[in-house]
Length: 313
Image (cartoon, rainbow, N blue to C red; front, side):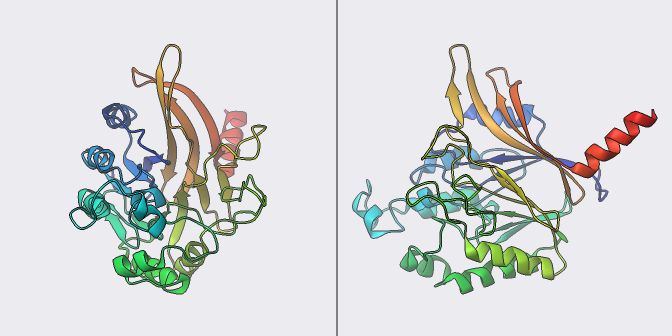
């Protein structure tokens, strides 16, 4: 792969896994010819073995932890249900150790082969306007509120080696709509309201003022299937005035057994330079071919250029 600024990069974004990850997923990513893999958390309820398999994936990757990844540790409610002894084991830390520097929660990963950096939002997020699991986040990261959380994310972005920054979070930022079907909209009673992370929105805005280019912000947590209706799905894409594309990748369940096949989904992002050209949700079958593809986003300028070119040729 060349290192010029307009190289085309194929990025796979993996939404909430919830224990649905197999060796076939690692193999499928290879067969798809993916350059970079982004995991947005919720591997399972502190699912160490799932994370171990993901850590063995031999492709450039970055990950952030979700609320389920500290399910038995972050809250008093969860600790009461814990299947192991916290004095003897720490499954949260085991996951973090397996991921090493590929875990970018409150951090960054510079990728010189692509001339970009991946920056993580707040790890273990539950989303919404309430600052949850205060003791856990203070002990792990020394962060006690949204303001300090924003500062941590911005510091990571400022330290990033490259001008182009991709943000990943478990939950998305506020500002993407307050309808139940919005990318981070509240789809349980009382219906409606923006359940995004306010610290994430502010950090993205501040990062842009530093002169960084943010083509993509991707996350999960808020599943595509809505709780209050089966008439439609959650909107998975949003854009802003600066051209940033926001992708909710939480298509759950991500592995489905059909009558004849076992299919698994990946969100595929085409990034050229600092511009998202296309995003598709693909389902891959047992022979690693794409059995269905839903186009979620296409860059309008690219479509216009193609249209002009086709008319002139």
